[in-house]
Amino acid sequence: MTGLVYKSTGSWYTVKTNLGAAYQCRIKGKFRLKGIKSTNPIAVGDVVDFELETNNDNVTGVIHTIHDRKNYIVRKSVNLSKQTHIIASNIDQVFLLITIDNPPTFTSFIDRFLVTAQAYAVKTILLFNKIDTYSDDTLAEVKYLAHIYRKIGYECIGISAETGKNVDKVKALMVDKVSMFAGHSGVGKSTLVNAIEPNLDLKTKAISTQHSQGQHTTTFAEMFDLSFNAKIIDTPGIKGFGIVDMDKEEVGDYFPEFFELKQDCKFNNCLHVEEPKCAVKEALDKDEISYSRYRSYLQILDGEEEHYRTDNWEEQ
Ligand SMILES: Nc1nc2c(ncn2[C@@H]2O[C@H](COP(=O)(O)OP(=O)(O)OP(=O)(O)O)[C@@H](O)[C@H]2O)c(=O)[nH]1
Ligand SMILES: [Mg+2]
Ligand SMILES: [Zn+2]
Image (cartoon, rainbow, N blue to C red):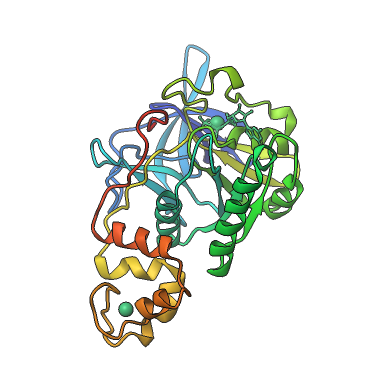
Protein backbone atom coordinates (compact mmCIF):
# COMPACT_ATOMS: atom_id res chain seq x y z
CA MET A 1 0.00 0.00 0.00
CA THR A 2 1.04 3.57 -0.57
CA GLY A 3 0.32 6.45 1.74
CA LEU A 4 1.29 9.89 2.91
CA VAL A 5 3.02 10.50 6.27
CA TYR A 6 0.86 12.81 8.40
CA LYS A 7 2.72 12.62 11.68
CA SER A 8 5.90 11.20 13.07
CA THR A 9 6.48 10.75 16.78
CA GLY A 10 9.86 9.12 16.86
CA SER A 11 9.42 5.46 16.06
CA TRP A 12 5.79 5.51 14.88
CA TYR A 13 4.41 7.21 11.80
CA THR A 14 0.79 7.97 11.00
CA VAL A 15 0.31 7.14 7.32
CA LYS A 16 -2.89 7.82 5.38
CA THR A 17 -3.77 6.09 2.11
CA ASN A 18 -5.56 8.04 -0.60
CA LEU A 19 -8.76 6.27 0.40
CA GLY A 20 -8.48 8.06 3.73
CA ALA A 21 -7.59 5.12 5.99
CA ALA A 22 -4.92 5.93 8.58
CA TYR A 23 -2.41 3.38 9.85
CA GLN A 24 0.25 3.49 12.54
CA CYS A 25 3.45 2.37 10.87
CA ARG A 26 7.02 1.73 11.82
CA ILE A 27 10.16 1.34 9.78
CA LYS A 28 11.66 -1.96 8.80
CA GLY A 29 15.40 -2.12 9.16
CA LYS A 30 17.61 0.85 8.58
CA PHE A 31 16.78 3.54 6.10
CA ARG A 32 19.76 5.06 4.40
CA LEU A 33 18.84 7.94 2.19
CA LYS A 34 21.05 9.14 -0.59
CA GLY A 35 23.04 12.21 0.36
CA ILE A 36 21.10 13.19 3.47
CA LYS A 37 22.45 12.65 6.93
CA SER A 38 19.45 13.32 9.07
CA THR A 39 18.21 12.47 12.51
CA ASN A 40 14.89 11.37 11.06
CA PRO A 41 14.77 8.98 8.10
CA ILE A 42 11.13 9.72 7.33
CA ALA A 43 9.39 13.07 7.58
CA VAL A 44 5.87 14.42 7.43
CA GLY A 45 4.93 14.78 3.78
CA ASP A 46 6.83 11.70 2.61
CA VAL A 47 5.11 9.23 0.32
CA VAL A 48 5.85 5.70 1.51
CA ASP A 49 5.03 2.10 0.63
CA PHE A 50 4.08 -0.14 3.50
CA GLU A 51 2.69 -3.56 4.32
CA LEU A 52 0.16 -4.39 6.97
CA GLU A 53 0.78 -6.84 9.77
CA THR A 54 -1.53 -8.05 12.49
CA ASN A 55 -0.58 -8.61 16.12
CA ASN A 56 -3.39 -9.66 18.45
CA ASP A 57 -6.08 -8.02 16.30
CA ASN A 58 -3.98 -4.89 16.18
CA VAL A 59 -3.27 -3.86 12.59
CA THR A 60 -0.15 -1.82 12.04
CA GLY A 61 2.04 -1.10 9.05
CA VAL A 62 5.67 -1.63 8.16
CA ILE A 63 7.22 0.97 5.89
CA HIS A 64 9.69 -0.49 3.42
CA THR A 65 10.09 2.13 0.69
CA ILE A 66 10.15 5.88 0.56
CA HIS A 67 9.39 7.65 -2.72
CA ASP A 68 11.73 10.35 -4.04
CA ARG A 69 11.10 13.71 -2.44
CA LYS A 70 10.10 16.67 -4.59
CA ASN A 71 11.71 18.95 -1.98
CA TYR A 72 12.14 19.25 1.76
CA ILE A 73 12.91 21.78 4.47
CA VAL A 74 15.77 20.91 6.76
CA ARG A 75 17.03 22.43 9.92
CA LYS A 76 20.56 22.07 11.13
CA SER A 77 20.92 22.12 14.84
CA VAL A 78 22.82 25.34 15.65
CA ASN A 79 24.78 24.48 18.70
CA LEU A 80 24.43 20.83 19.50
CA SER A 81 25.15 17.90 17.29
CA LYS A 82 25.30 19.59 13.86
CA GLN A 83 22.80 17.00 12.82
CA THR A 84 20.23 17.70 10.14
CA HIS A 85 16.56 17.29 10.79
CA ILE A 86 14.03 17.15 7.96
CA ILE A 87 11.08 19.23 9.09
CA ALA A 88 8.76 18.29 6.22
CA SER A 89 8.88 17.19 2.61
CA ASN A 90 6.92 17.54 -0.64
CA ILE A 91 5.52 20.94 0.21
CA ASP A 92 4.18 23.52 -2.24
CA GLN A 93 4.85 26.55 -0.05
CA VAL A 94 5.97 27.68 3.37
CA PHE A 95 4.42 30.47 5.36
CA LEU A 96 7.06 31.90 7.66
CA LEU A 97 5.38 33.49 10.67
CA ILE A 98 7.18 36.50 12.06
CA THR A 99 6.48 38.54 15.18
CA ILE A 100 8.38 41.69 16.04
CA ASP A 101 8.20 41.04 19.74
CA ASN A 102 6.87 38.33 22.01
CA PRO A 103 8.85 36.54 20.63
CA PRO A 104 11.18 38.72 18.55
CA THR A 105 12.11 37.45 15.11
CA PHE A 106 15.38 38.88 13.83
CA THR A 107 16.25 39.43 10.20
CA SER A 108 19.22 37.07 10.53
CA PHE A 109 16.75 34.27 11.23
CA ILE A 110 14.39 35.31 8.42
CA ASP A 111 17.26 35.45 5.94
CA ARG A 112 18.68 32.09 6.95
CA PHE A 113 15.28 30.55 6.57
CA LEU A 114 14.80 32.13 3.14
CA VAL A 115 18.22 30.93 1.95
CA THR A 116 17.40 27.37 2.94
CA ALA A 117 13.96 27.49 1.33
CA GLN A 118 15.40 29.05 -1.81
CA ALA A 119 18.12 26.39 -1.98
CA TYR A 120 15.50 23.66 -1.84
CA ALA A 121 13.21 25.53 -4.24
CA VAL A 122 10.35 26.00 -1.78
CA LYS A 123 8.24 29.12 -2.24
CA THR A 124 8.02 31.20 0.95
CA ILE A 125 5.42 33.76 1.98
CA LEU A 126 6.07 36.01 4.99
CA LEU A 127 3.27 36.47 7.52
CA PHE A 128 3.70 39.21 10.09
CA ASN A 129 1.46 37.98 12.89
CA LYS A 130 -0.05 39.57 16.01
CA ILE A 131 -0.57 42.94 14.31
CA ASP A 132 -3.50 43.44 16.70
CA THR A 133 -0.99 43.96 19.53
CA TYR A 134 1.41 46.36 17.86
CA SER A 135 2.08 49.99 18.66
CA ASP A 136 2.52 52.47 15.85
CA ASP A 137 6.29 52.07 16.11
CA THR A 138 6.10 48.31 15.82
CA LEU A 139 3.70 48.58 12.89
CA ALA A 140 6.17 50.91 11.21
CA GLU A 141 8.82 48.21 11.64
CA VAL A 142 6.51 45.64 10.04
CA LYS A 143 5.96 48.01 7.13
CA TYR A 144 9.66 48.55 6.74
CA LEU A 145 10.44 44.83 6.75
CA ALA A 146 7.58 44.09 4.38
CA HIS A 147 8.97 46.72 2.04
CA ILE A 148 12.43 45.10 2.08
CA TYR A 149 11.10 41.62 1.36
CA ARG A 150 8.45 42.63 -1.19
CA LYS A 151 11.08 44.46 -3.16
CA ILE A 152 13.01 41.22 -3.62
CA GLY A 153 9.98 39.19 -4.59
CA TYR A 154 8.50 37.75 -1.39
CA GLU A 155 4.82 38.17 -0.72
CA CYS A 156 4.22 39.70 2.74
CA ILE A 157 0.95 39.86 4.65
CA GLY A 158 0.24 41.44 8.03
CA ILE A 159 -2.19 39.23 9.92
CA SER A 160 -3.75 38.52 13.28
CA ALA A 161 -4.50 34.89 13.98
CA GLU A 162 -6.33 36.12 17.07
CA THR A 163 -8.76 38.58 15.47
CA GLY A 164 -8.85 36.91 12.06
CA LYS A 165 -7.44 39.94 10.24
CA ASN A 166 -6.30 38.89 6.74
CA VAL A 167 -6.66 35.20 7.55
CA ASP A 168 -8.92 34.92 4.48
CA LYS A 169 -5.99 36.06 2.34
CA VAL A 170 -3.81 33.27 3.74
CA LYS A 171 -6.61 30.78 3.17
CA ALA A 172 -7.01 31.83 -0.44
CA LEU A 173 -3.31 31.17 -1.07
CA MET A 174 -3.60 27.69 0.44
CA VAL A 175 -6.30 26.23 -1.82
CA ASP A 176 -5.18 23.08 -3.69
CA LYS A 177 -1.76 23.16 -2.03
CA VAL A 178 0.31 21.56 0.71
CA SER A 179 1.52 24.37 2.96
CA MET A 180 3.74 24.46 5.99
CA PHE A 181 3.73 26.97 8.86
CA ALA A 182 7.17 27.73 10.27
CA GLY A 183 8.68 30.20 12.72
CA HIS A 184 9.86 30.58 16.30
CA SER A 185 7.94 29.02 19.16
CA GLY A 186 5.09 31.30 20.22
CA VAL A 187 4.64 33.22 16.95
CA GLY A 188 1.16 31.72 16.55
CA LYS A 189 1.44 28.86 14.06
CA SER A 190 -1.09 26.61 15.77
CA THR A 191 -3.35 29.58 16.54
CA LEU A 192 -3.38 30.35 12.82
CA VAL A 193 -4.26 26.75 11.94
CA ASN A 194 -7.18 27.02 14.38
CA ALA A 195 -8.26 30.34 12.88
CA ILE A 196 -8.32 28.72 9.46
CA GLU A 197 -10.09 25.54 10.59
CA PRO A 198 -11.65 26.06 14.04
CA ASN A 199 -12.81 22.46 14.49
CA LEU A 200 -9.21 21.22 14.55
CA ASP A 201 -8.83 22.91 17.92
CA LEU A 202 -5.06 22.51 18.17
CA LYS A 203 -3.32 23.11 21.42
CA THR A 204 -1.87 26.62 21.68
CA LYS A 205 0.11 28.24 24.39
CA ALA A 206 -2.09 29.73 27.10
CA ILE A 207 -1.36 33.40 27.71
CA SER A 208 -0.44 32.70 31.36
CA THR A 209 2.29 30.20 30.44
CA GLN A 210 3.67 32.22 27.58
CA HIS A 211 6.75 33.32 29.46
CA SER A 212 7.69 29.97 30.85
CA GLN A 213 11.11 28.91 29.68
CA GLY A 214 11.68 26.71 26.70
CA GLN A 215 8.09 25.65 26.34
CA HIS A 216 7.05 24.29 23.02
CA THR A 217 3.36 23.83 22.65
CA THR A 218 3.59 21.88 19.43
CA THR A 219 6.17 19.13 19.75
CA PHE A 220 5.85 17.20 16.48
CA ALA A 221 5.20 18.31 12.93
CA GLU A 222 1.75 17.21 11.82
CA MET A 223 -0.22 17.48 8.61
CA PHE A 224 -3.96 18.20 8.57
CA ASP A 225 -6.56 17.94 5.80
CA LEU A 226 -8.55 21.15 5.63
CA SER A 227 -12.15 21.52 4.50
CA PHE A 228 -11.30 23.65 1.47
CA ASN A 229 -9.06 21.19 -0.35
CA ALA A 230 -5.81 22.15 1.25
CA LYS A 231 -3.27 20.53 3.50
CA ILE A 232 -1.36 22.25 6.25
CA ILE A 233 1.67 21.11 8.20
CA ASP A 234 1.93 22.67 11.65
CA THR A 235 5.48 22.49 12.98
CA PRO A 236 7.16 22.97 16.35
CA GLY A 237 8.96 26.27 16.80
CA ILE A 238 12.50 26.56 15.51
CA LYS A 239 14.94 28.74 17.35
CA GLY A 240 18.14 29.02 15.43
CA PHE A 241 18.67 28.04 11.89
CA GLY A 242 21.99 26.60 10.78
CA ILE A 243 22.63 26.60 7.08
CA VAL A 244 23.13 23.14 5.72
CA ASP A 245 26.42 22.62 3.89
CA MET A 246 26.65 25.06 1.06
CA ASP A 247 29.63 26.28 -0.95
CA LYS A 248 30.58 29.89 -0.30
CA GLU A 249 30.06 30.68 -4.00
CA GLU A 250 26.56 29.31 -3.79
CA VAL A 251 25.21 31.43 -0.92
CA GLY A 252 24.73 34.62 -2.98
CA ASP A 253 22.61 32.72 -5.48
CA TYR A 254 19.95 32.26 -2.80
CA PHE A 255 19.70 35.99 -2.17
CA PRO A 256 17.50 36.84 -5.19
CA GLU A 257 18.58 40.51 -5.29
CA PHE A 258 22.27 39.52 -5.29
CA PHE A 259 21.73 36.83 -7.88
CA GLU A 260 20.14 39.36 -10.21
CA LEU A 261 23.23 41.59 -10.08
CA LYS A 262 25.84 38.87 -10.20
CA GLN A 263 26.50 39.12 -13.94
CA ASP A 264 27.43 42.79 -13.48
CA CYS A 265 30.24 41.98 -11.03
CA LYS A 266 33.72 42.14 -12.55
CA PHE A 267 34.59 38.62 -11.48
CA ASN A 268 32.20 35.85 -12.26
CA ASN A 269 33.08 34.08 -9.01
CA CYS A 270 32.64 37.29 -7.01
CA LEU A 271 31.73 36.72 -3.37
CA HIS A 272 30.65 40.37 -3.02
CA VAL A 273 33.03 40.98 -0.14
CA GLU A 274 36.39 42.54 -1.03
CA GLU A 275 36.41 42.25 -4.79
CA PRO A 276 36.70 45.41 -6.91
CA LYS A 277 33.85 46.45 -9.21
CA CYS A 278 31.29 44.38 -7.36
CA ALA A 279 27.75 45.21 -8.48
CA VAL A 280 26.27 43.99 -5.20
CA LYS A 281 28.46 46.30 -3.11
CA GLU A 282 27.77 49.19 -5.46
CA ALA A 283 24.04 48.58 -5.05
CA LEU A 284 24.54 48.44 -1.29
CA ASP A 285 26.30 51.81 -1.37
CA LYS A 286 23.37 53.24 -3.29
CA ASP A 287 20.89 51.77 -0.77
CA GLU A 288 19.38 49.57 -3.43
CA ILE A 289 20.18 46.52 -1.35
CA SER A 290 19.18 46.39 2.27
CA TYR A 291 22.04 46.46 4.73
CA SER A 292 20.38 43.90 7.00
CA ARG A 293 20.25 41.45 4.10
CA TYR A 294 23.92 42.04 3.32
CA ARG A 295 24.83 41.57 6.98
CA SER A 296 22.95 38.26 7.07
CA TYR A 297 24.81 37.24 3.92
CA LEU A 298 28.20 37.98 5.49
CA GLN A 299 27.25 36.01 8.61
CA ILE A 300 26.29 32.98 6.57
CA LEU A 301 29.44 33.31 4.49
CA ASP A 302 31.57 33.41 7.63
CA GLY A 303 29.85 30.29 8.84
CA GLU A 304 28.94 32.35 11.84
CA GLU A 305 26.24 30.84 13.93
CA GLU A 306 23.13 32.81 14.39
CA HIS A 307 22.99 35.13 17.37
CA TYR A 308 19.85 34.43 19.20
CA ARG A 309 18.47 34.92 22.64
CA THR A 310 19.02 31.96 24.84
CA ASP A 311 16.87 33.09 27.73
CA ASN A 312 13.40 32.34 26.47
CA TRP A 313 13.19 30.38 23.31
CA GLU A 314 14.67 26.93 23.41
CA GLU A 315 15.38 24.91 20.36
CA GLN A 316 13.21 21.89 19.94
N1 LIG B 1 -2.68 38.97 20.40
C1 LIG B 1 -2.41 37.93 19.62
N2 LIG B 1 -1.98 36.78 20.17
C2 LIG B 1 -1.71 35.74 19.35
C3 LIG B 1 -1.87 35.82 17.95
N3 LIG B 1 -1.52 34.62 17.41
C4 LIG B 1 -1.16 33.84 18.44
N4 LIG B 1 -1.28 34.50 19.62
C5 LIG B 1 -0.97 33.97 20.96
O1 LIG B 1 0.40 33.59 20.99
C6 LIG B 1 0.57 32.45 21.84
C7 LIG B 1 1.36 31.37 21.12
O2 LIG B 1 0.58 30.86 20.06
P1 LIG B 1 0.78 29.38 19.48
O3 LIG B 1 -0.19 29.24 18.35
O4 LIG B 1 0.75 28.35 20.54
O5 LIG B 1 2.28 29.48 18.91
P2 LIG B 1 3.09 28.38 18.05
O6 LIG B 1 3.82 29.14 17.00
O7 LIG B 1 2.19 27.30 17.61
O8 LIG B 1 4.15 27.86 19.16
P3 LIG B 1 4.90 26.41 19.22
O9 LIG B 1 3.85 25.36 19.04
O10 LIG B 1 5.53 26.39 20.57
O11 LIG B 1 5.91 26.43 18.12
C8 LIG B 1 -0.84 32.04 22.27
O12 LIG B 1 -1.08 32.55 23.55
C9 LIG B 1 -1.74 32.70 21.26
O13 LIG B 1 -3.01 32.97 21.78
C10 LIG B 1 -2.33 37.07 17.39
O14 LIG B 1 -2.49 37.25 16.20
N5 LIG B 1 -2.58 38.08 18.28
MG1 LIG C 1 2.22 25.27 17.90
ZN1 LIG D 1 30.04 40.97 -6.48
